[in-house]
Structure formats: structure tokens, C-alpha cells
Image 1 (spheres, one colour):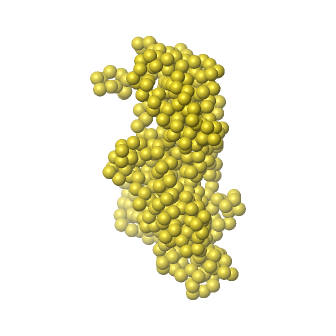
Image 2 (spheres, rainbow, N blue to C red):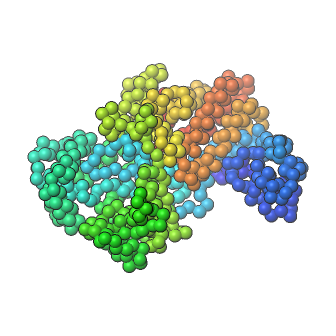
Image 3 (cartoon, rainbow, N blue to C red):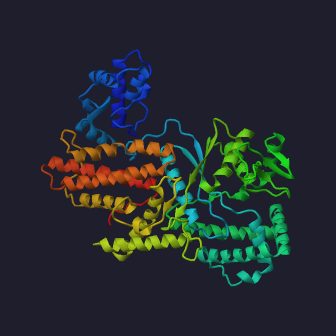
Length: 587
């Protein structure tokens, strides 16, 4: 792979050398100037150094300027304000750097691999067996998928895990109800799969739940059925497996509509850790991490108390011998650390479960399963809100089915594509409508910091104006149109040409792609990449408005501007792919 040092890094290296020359006795100078590759060119580290050395920052900045080497990378540098350094890089440096990125034989645009990649297990997209997926399942899937793509692109060994809900009391309830009411699913033929089959299972679940809550004798029978399930009773297991298999077909259909790859080998639900639960409890109790309290096995925390001021424990095993979510989650940690050899465990889970995971992680640390070398982190996400600012519901107050939401997004997007389409067939409009609609849903989610709530507004999501994926997709399609119309002219970087302000701004931003990807991956922050891409599309729009491409003044300028178009399109394409969003060639 072609290794390309970003212009920001190159400038910081020059500043660090200049500062070391100006203050050779100061060993702290270099780190202060290397605080972040994404820091602006004003190098505010000088202000911090001046404060530490009790020196006049403007005088210190002036000394640094005297030692800055200019010519190849830096065109000029001057002191501004209290001690900022305003730096202008050369046009040649911009174009040479972009040419090097374009020449990357692996097509990575010069994005380097991480220096010390590790193994990260990413737990995301966690639907429940025998239940339809709703809007609440959207963020875990979309955010997790993008984080996986970012980590893999930077060289991390990623192990995907989909911790589906496929075990516990609800399955004893379901199986017992079906045994007692076999006619409930008699009408369902073998050909009924996917959404229709899941709708039937959902209806069955509601009926079973109603009986479970109102009939104590049925509740007792259902709980006895859970024991049969845990013991591996053949008849019970066969019905359970039928629920799981049918649900997986449905899951795959929804994720396929969401344009996400979910592999069967990555689905390890709660049942996958069933054989580990007793040992997990034994290890916790023998080590003293967990203690018996009123018959239950509990872990207590000094800082977790209820409204009455009494400690609220993490219950690992219930007083009746049953296991809860904590036992399963702790067993999963053991599996991921000791069997999968992961050094990072990342959980893309609703922020409302933060206390649970805080207690689970602390319990694992006390047990020695997590330590300085093996860490766990919850990437907590906020809630999808309706236009009224409340959790997104239907008009009847029901949870919104995810497939309904996606279908409506595709329908709205198809209308937008049809309105703009000039030479697209109906089949192409349908294909582009799906790409634009799903992209709109994903981008609205990913352009918001994960820990924040966001409003689900389809009208805004499919708008051609503003911070939307449609705006980015149309920018990409516009570039492809220009490249198709170029005839014999070909993109070629011309470092010898002078650049306009619009060309410089676009070129400098394209050059920052690698640093943005690195930062977004390191911080599990797809929203930073989304923000970068929106700014890229905005700068390209300004460039397009101010700089004629095919009608530029000279053939060399045509080639150079075609090159800027091409490198921008490639950056948009790669960046959007890391968000899990398609970039149609024509719109």
C-alpha cells in the first residue's frame, strides 16, 4: 500500500522541528505540537508551551517562524493574534499528496492500517426470536455495522456477534402454549416464511403472554417447560429450534432490506452460553465476587443504591436457581476473552441498559476476566424519536415495525428519484429508490452522535438539500456524469498549476480523509466520518459552482479539475461504503 503522510501531519512535523530549533533545551516542545493530527494549522500548542514556560506566546511564535522551512510543503507562515501561526501550504504539495493517494495500488486512498491492530468483538444487531423487529432495533444494527466496517478497514481483527434473545422464560411460555393450542398454527403452511411467519409468531406470543399473566396454573406449567428446555428435552428442543429457525429467516430478510450482511456463524444467542452458566456462578461465588443474599447469588456495589438507599445488586442467579441476563452476559465475556482471545469487547447497546453493563463489566473486572489488557466498552446509543420529540410510535401508540419504516423510506426516496430521473427505467428507479431510501435512514442515524437521541423525519431524510445522504449521493452522481461527458480528456494531477481558493479548500479536505477514518475508528464514532463527508460534498458543490471543469481555460486545467472530481468521488464512495451506504452512478 502507498503510505501518504497527510499535509496536516507534514506541517506539524515542520513546526515541531522549528520549535526544537528555537528551544533546543525544551524537551516538552515536540509533544505539545503533536497533540492531534486533526488540530488546525494554527498550532495552538505554542500557546500551551508558552504558558508552561512563562514566556510571551507571541515572542515564542515569532522565534518558531524564523526556523520554519518553507518552499516545498509550507508556502508561508505568519504570527497572528496572541501567538497563533497562520500557515499556508503550497499548491504543489496539495496536488502531489492527492496524486499519491490516487495512486494507492490497493485503492485505499492512502489510508494506513493501524500500527498495532488487535482483536475486537463487536456485539450488535440483537433481535429477539419469535418477535418482530421494531424501530428500537435500528440503531444497534446501523451503528454496529458501520463501526465493524471502520475497524476492519483500519486492519483490526473483528469478530461479529449477534446476541439474539433466544432463551429464557418466554420460550417456556411459548412452547407450552403451542402444545396446549396446536390449532393456533395449523393454518400456517411450510411455504409461509419471513414477515408473515413472524407476524403469526408475534400473534402467538401475545396470546401466550396474556394467558401467562392471567392464569397462575399456566404460568406454573410454562416455568416447568423452561426447566425441560434447559434440560434438553427432545420435544421441547424441537419446538424451540423451529422458533429459532423461522426467526432467523425473518431476521435475514429484514437485514437484507437494510442492506446489511448478517452471517449465521456470527449469531450466538443467549442459548449459546447455557452450558457455561453454572460454572460462571461457581467461579464468582468461590472467588468471593458474588455472595448469596436471600437465596440469590448477587454482586453488590457501593455506588449502586435504590430509592430507599439500600444497595441494588446484580443478580447472577435467582433464588429459584434460574439464571438471568447477568449470568449470560458474564459467560459471554468469559467466552470472548478466553476462547476468542479478544482484547476489546464492544457492546452497541441502548443507553437505557448502561447501569446493567456497568455492573456486568465491574463484576468481570473483579473476577479478573477484564483487566488493563482486556477491556469492555458499551457504545451506548440514544432513542429514535418521533416528530413530537417522544419515542417513535404509531398513531395507535404501538411500536413501529422496522420493515414498515424501511418500506416507507424506500417509497419516499423512489418518488424523489422518479422526479429527478431523466434517463432511468422503472427498474432502475426502484433500485435507486431502495439505495437512496435505506441510505437516508442510515445516514440520519449515523450523522448523529450515538449517545444522542434523534428525530425520525422522513421528509428531511430524503431531502436533496441539507445534511442528508441524498445530498451526498447526488454529489457523487454529478461527478460521475461529468466524468462520462469528459470524452478523451482524462483526470490527471497537475502539481505545477496554481489553484483557486475553491480548489485548495476541496483538495485540503480530501487529504484529511485518512485522518478522519483513523479517528472515527479509534473513537467508534461514525458520525465524525459522516460530518466529514457532508463537508466534502459541500466543498465540492462550491468548487463545481466556481470552477468550470470541462470548459476550463486550458487542457491542463481540465485534466487537473477532472482529477479533483475523480479523487472526490472516490473519497465519497469509500467513505459512504464505510457507513454502509450505496453511491449510485446515476440519479
